[in-house]
Length: 159
Image (cartoon, rainbow, N blue to C red; front, side, top):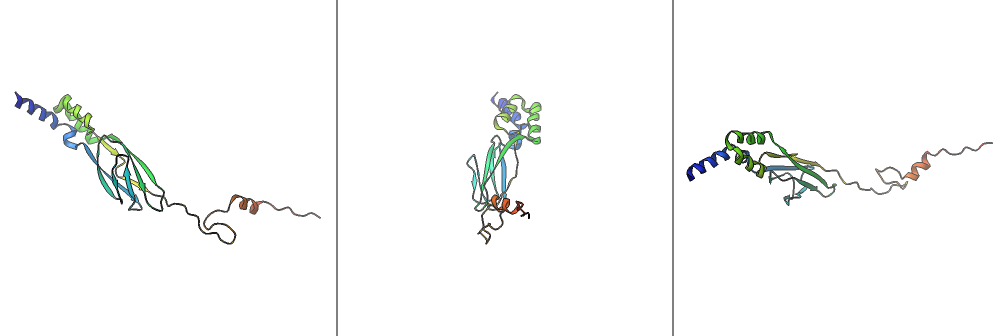
């Protein structure tokens, strides 16, 4: 009787997404420019992009990118039902039954992460340059009062 029960259980798992897809997903992170530090809200980290992590298919998280001279950026990573995950879950109707469906639901094996790969385009920090002779900083617009003074019509004396 135990052999039959074990065979039935193994057959039930054979058609489910947990067996065909696994319970983790590989997440690739990259940045432009490369070599940014990346950390997730789950505790994964890498000192320089690009890198890849194994993450539970059920986990939703945020990736934070940092690099000297650039603004930090956060990108949320969500989950959605994958096409192949849905097919594995549907296979439970034929082979796995309720046990396989329960296992798939519990492990999140029908899910995939989005976006994957996670790519951050980092913006350079704005730095003020040295002042030129007019008192304006190079590369920056004049201060508001300078603009007003330059564009305010001058009174013309009447005789």
